[in-house]
Amino acid sequence: DGVRDEALSITRQLVSALRQLASVASEIEFERKKKRQEDSQQVENALKSAIEEPEVAQALQELTSAGRDNLSKAKTYLTDVLRERVPGAEKAILQVAGRHISKLLQKNQAGTQGADATGEATQGSEEMANDGEDST
Image 1 (cartoon, rainbow, N blue to C red):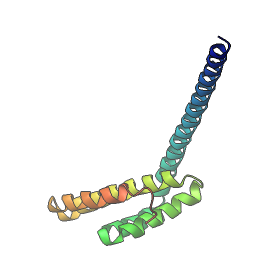
Image 2 (tube, rainbow, N blue to C red):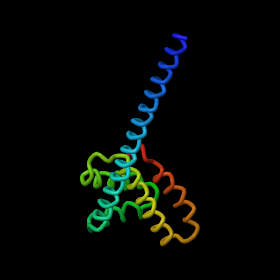
Image 3 (cartoon, helix red, strand yellow):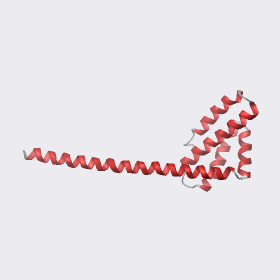
Image 4 (cartoon, rainbow, N blue to C red):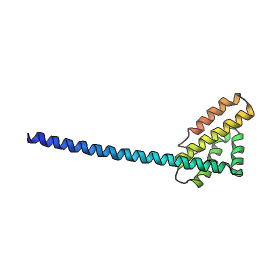
């Protein structure tokens, strides 16, 4: 009976420790998610502010109107602008910049080349928007 009681006691301690560990892990994940959301919101706000500036808007318009060959340059330019405004939010910057460049490309190509370019613009823009890990 002594061994059985000791095993039961150890099992209870182990279960308690595992519950505490799960609680800590969920708190960490919650904090990470909260940080990602805050970063994303800050970057979105910085983007809105940046594209209202004539020099930024003009540079992006020129780069994206030149077609898919300049997507990388456009995204690099925009990420540099956003990095100055929101340091430390790299992943959110890359995602927001990619999405914005995609929208600009679609808008430019739909307006200048008609419906035939829409498929190409969508393909290139999806590649750019999904490129959250690469800064090009």
